[in-house]
Length: 212
Image (cartoon, rainbow, N blue to C red; front, side, top):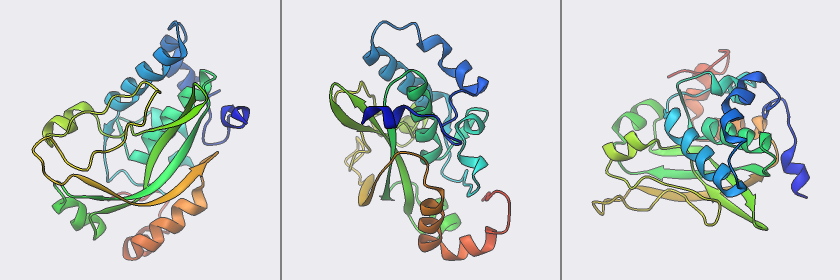
């Protein structure tokens, strides 16, 4: 079963030299857990989270494309982490959900028409016989800005967005779970985006890359 989640694909293109460069320094860590933990921190903090870096093309969701950018959406960063894990022979897959953000939502509502993000991307890692969830989306600087405890991950237990920030303000609510995916489900992502942001979808669907 785990071998299914070690495969490369058009999207999870870990044979690409760009991805090989990303993972090169992690190959020499002693344990699988160290690789999971250190690679997570690298993806979390070296690509700034940007909720408005939105694309609906196949190329947008290629890991090698994402790796060349300076920032990424939660789905993008999860794809990059999954691809790098598979490059290190660690099974990983994409999980999608719908979340509601409650902090600094003015711009989000202005751009998307809603404080809900769909789909929201997470990573699931198979380690010690279990699938464990994590979100490498929010870089440390962003967490500090919104007074949210930064998420770490070592593969042993789930590490997902907190319901409240450290000021006891409502932060994030998980609304729907769309399940797990072996590869990037582009058609599902596009349909979910269309269902949740119909006006924006119609406005940009004929462009090669959505940018707002």
